[in-house]
Image (cartoon, rainbow, N blue to C red; front, top):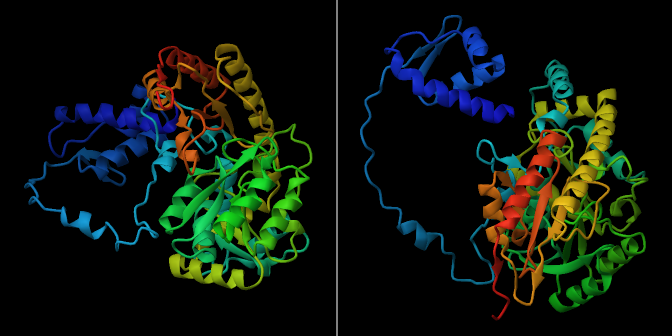
Length: 488
């Protein structure tokens, strides 16, 4: 059981027992609750804090927790929010839609119900996160002189220089902006490089968070198919010619969701095609710190071999460390950097200095290298275990590519002349069977060519939970109907 579910279960248990206590009466001590429920003191502290936030208990430092007096509550007046439907409908221009669909993000960010195995998560399980190293880094960072003062607007120079060294020798701190994680960097890049209503070329399939950010900025995602070697240059060139787009967003390394790597032959072609079109390539290098131990030497970022400022590079520490270490970087050259800087300043001012100082302490310590080596070994083992389990339990699901990095497997659901697997029904059946998976539909900017699901092996507790998740998925698969064939 993970910490999150333990807190929820303990809070629920205490909530049901509150009627035993009179208002003002003291609840059992933390030590008594630890012994009774066999949970950690941290779990007890968080559960009691949850009840305090609900107004059910009152905590007094050094004295304990007490049942709160019931508050007299009156029903709030009924309001009428129907006017907002008209206001939010836009200005009548179909070229700049105002609706924002975050359902693709919620599919991997929302916590599943208690007892459901999380094969839809996008972040490292707590057991894989460097929590002790982060705590130590946070402690050291908090003691730094000026740690709570305003940081440089572009970010700490030392942190910018560290990110720049990871891109290549031609980049320096002056080319880098510190951002609040990769999603923030993507949103900034899209707003800075493309005008509302403009097309933006994207890989197909691709990361739903990028599609959501593009649409929120009023842009029109235009899909360009990928195969086992990454995006197809011939289709990329055709898409630039047909749309007049000035931005192409890609993930050349361990692409989400397919896990593919842009081939050596295609890498210069992609940059050349964009340069010829007078367009930018936004390189989302989100998985560079998530290579598996059998990945071999990684290709250099596209930005490393781009002297002309075609490539705007993004990377983040979040995926490899903790979902709450929202520290990333944007690297660019020329007038584009000034535009990016202005957009970020307007949106967020700057990334909080304590967070930047913590990140700098973490990556500058020997613990960072040890952590990355441990993650590489663990993710490689989990990938291998999940692949073997799927091939044994669910041989009917297509697995065209086994990645050497990242944390996901991209599976195609079978079809026939009689119909194809109902993707939505499969996802719902899996949830009923006690396992959460991610539907494939949100990864496509247009109609998907076939039904898919994405499975994560980073967010489970370990091999046993992974194996149980696949077993439950098989149960769901056996009860999933086929959808009617297209046009049927």
